[in-house]
Structures are given as structure tokens and as C-alpha cells.
Image (tube, rainbow, N blue to C red; front, top):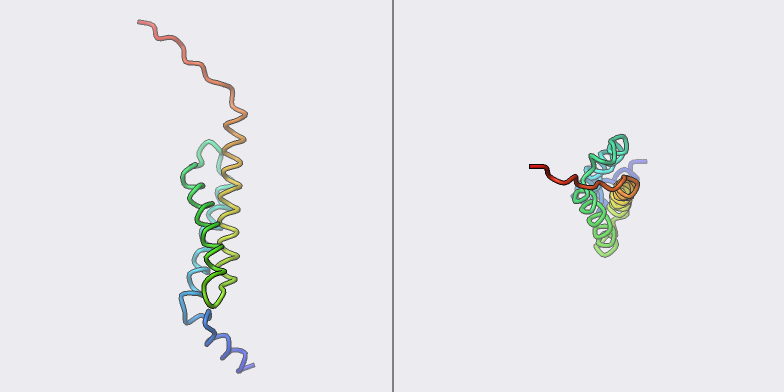
Length: 108
């Protein structure tokens, strides 16, 4: 048991490194994305969700290229990307189903 704990503590991606703490803190973005599922689609930000989706995809790829391969970082970024994609789909669906707004002529 002590050897397993020691191996965990001294692992290249263990709790003594940023490779452990960065993914752990990034789960906050996933939790925020889950919280946004309760918000109405008209109040969601396209640019924010595009950024979440893009960074999720980019950093998922990056996490497979660094040594040691950081599966924790990869998994959190997959979820960040998926939450951004889901919110963008909600925004698209909302806007697609809105009736076209025709500007009334100005009366002077």
C-alpha cells in the first residue's frame, strides 16, 4: 500500500506537478458548462462557446503529444469541447426556430 501511494505521489503526472492540478481545476469549466444547460438559449454566448469548443479540441490533441501522455488532461478537454459543442447546438436550434423579424417601416 505504501509503495502504491509513493508511486502515485512521485509519478511524472502526480500531485506534485502541474500535470495533475491543471486538469483538476479545469473540471470547473465542465461544471460551468453543465450549469449553462439550465440557462435559456438566447442568453448563451456564441463566442464563449466557440472558444470552449476550440480549446477543448486543441488541448485534447496536445495532451496526447506531451510526455508523459496526460489522460486526465485529455478527458477534461474532451468534456470541455463537448459542452461547448452542445451549447452551440442549442443556440443554433433556438435561432433556427425563431420566426423571421421584419423591420417595420419608420414613420416620421
